[in-house]
Image (tube, rainbow, N blue to C red):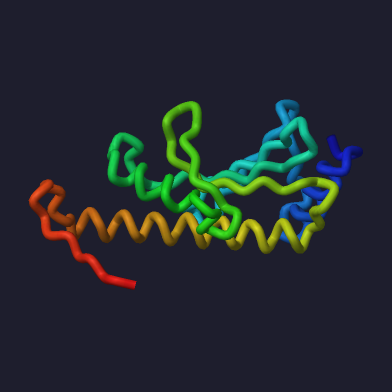
Length: 146
């Protein structure tokens, strides 16, 4: 797949990361382990996109967490990065990059943004686990007029 535009972009990206052997496999995927904690998947989408995805360290079965993630998708609050539930029920942050509009510096910037967003959400949910808020319907609501 090196002869495709996406393959060439990935090869340049790999060189910039110090990984010249980085390439898509036969299924159009490649994986990176960043800082021994972030598993990033790059998938070649059939419509000229590279989909960059990173799982979060949260439980997908918690309705309040999923609600918060879906609300973050509204209006692209995460700067184009979306939250998604993978087919295996893993919550991920994702970003789609159009191959025809993407160069190696863009991929580096997007990887950094994706990891920042993953770290931000992981920290948010870790803090919420340590300091749970009351979830009863009688919990006080704070209302501020605007």
